[in-house]
Amino acid sequence: MRARICSFFRTGSVLALALTMASLGPVAQAQTRMTYKSALAGTAYHQMGSELAQAIRQGSDETLLLTNEESQGSVQNIQEVMNRQERYVFTAPPALVAQAQAGEGVFASHDRERFGAIRGLFPVPSLTMHFVMAGDDGTTSIDALSGKHVLIGRGTFSAGEAARYFRLFGLEDSVRLADASITNGPEALREGRIDAFVTASSYPTPNVIETASLVPITLVSFTAEQIAQTGAVPQVIPGGTYPGIAQPTHTTSMPVVAYTTEQMDVETAYRLTKLFWEQQPWLAEQSAWWGSVTPDLLTHLTTPLHPGARRYYEEAGMELPAHVR
Image 1 (cartoon, rainbow, N blue to C red):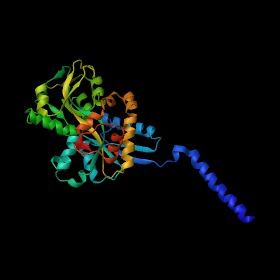
Image 2 (cartoon, helix red, strand yellow):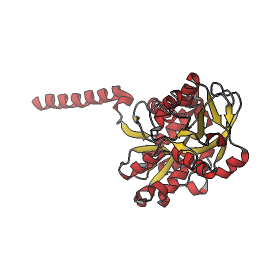
Image 3 (cartoon, rainbow, N blue to C red):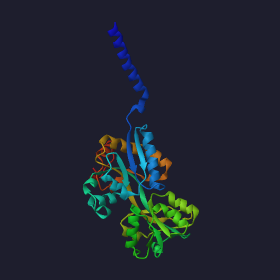
Image 4 (cartoon, rainbow, N blue to C red):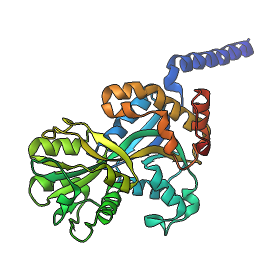
């Protein structure tokens, strides 16, 4: 009799546990947490990181969680591959990743082997170069920066591009560079401590909107020949995007991709990529810049896709360039 009673209670306990686990539903699934590193707080890309984290959280029923961590920019994001583990996601222009894998520029002193482990996941809105000057001229030429005190920041993609453009257009010796973080740009321009600042972000970018709402601004607009000289992708910022700028601004852009490393497990990379594309229509409803993201941007990748991401694209029937497979 005692044996039958003990057996009954053991069976009852197992049944109760099973019922409890079933009632928990999706909450009972294990959570996977990842770091997402993109840009400085207050920039468009940091805002995008928050939007993406929310989209992935709600799309996965809170089983896939991104922590949007502040960054100094793409250079730092790539450099941290040296120390981060398998649950690290970051954004960077493909050209900068190619530079790291070749051991060139700021990456010359790093171990190229770790950079070789970088793998693509999905594109995010492209970087658009903004040369923002004080004044109410609407748009002007790059030559207007000659003799000006300009803040470009340091250690970011936009800082590197701005310096390259100054060399390219003969302004390297005539532009005086301010030694400060780019986050100080809008405030310094408003207070007259600098004449211009340069930032690279998807338009409309919050810090430019904020600046233009407080003081008149002028944007540098390039000629078609100058854009061709840069070797970058042409980009037009429509008139009316920023207060006081009625005419279109002709500038350049650089595709940006969300990356991880080959240390990330295939299932996590697959789920993250799948959730991104499933949530992209919702993201575009929240902020217009997400509407510009299409699978065609994958052609700009200089490194292969992560096998988990590739699995999603193949299942979805998306055509992939041979060099990213």
